[in-house]
Image 1 (cartoon, rainbow, N blue to C red):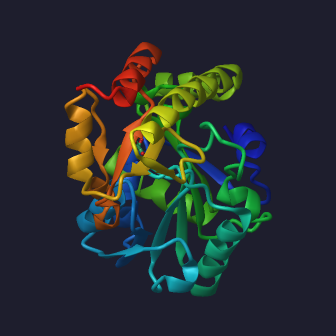
Image 2: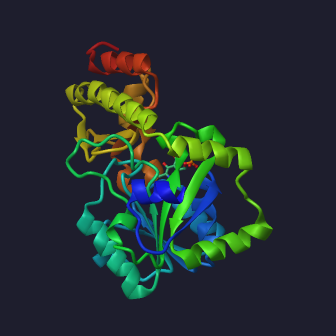
Image 3: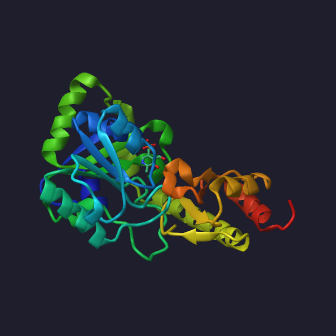
Length: 291
Ligand SMILES: Cc1ncc(COP(=O)(O)O)c(C=O)c1O
């Protein structure tokens, strides 16, 4: 897994790797493992960052992209490509987040579970560790095989980064458990050794996005971000529930943006995880003027 991390994440310098049961579990328990008292998380985000802070009884603060607006906190989450928006952090934005972490001696956890999926090429998704230039102190890349290799049922993830932080987490896990079963670790090593299936899966998602995007646009939705990842993030500048109801009347299920934070209350998230046939069918229904 070390070789994979060097190859795929571009990590250099001293670093460690630790397999984790899924990445949701790690996201939920990291603030507890690190005894964080304060946690920053993206204002439009995967809800488990907040839940993890609540489990640790830490103060949780939703923050924007620019670290210039962040409060000092023990732990800050970033997520690029983002669930739900598909926004990709530029190298400069990642560097600014690292600078914040170094200035404040604070942990920066970069949830990179969508790193492989599929980019429009505007800004290629990269790992925080490739920007760190060999100084990985206080940095963790959170990796999941659920999306990369479609192995959600295996609960297979890993963290890569700061040797001391990972040693601290490993020490706690010796007693708290949450160890990844040996057969799953072997399956992970095989999956990480192959990039062909990852490229095939990424192409599948990209094709589905190309089918759904024009259908949503023809129905009056503006697509925002959606540069990479598994989702289309769009708005009709109306309540997310109105958009969801409109789609539901056509037999199409999407997620209200407010599930990811109040800032998303006029957006919806459309997933690309249905089958090709279902996506094609959904596009026809969305683009049709008849209910
Ligand atoms: C941003 C983000 N992080 C982490 C996860 C957790 O994935 P898993 O626990 O399957 O690795 C998800 C799942 O949807 C996610 O969207």
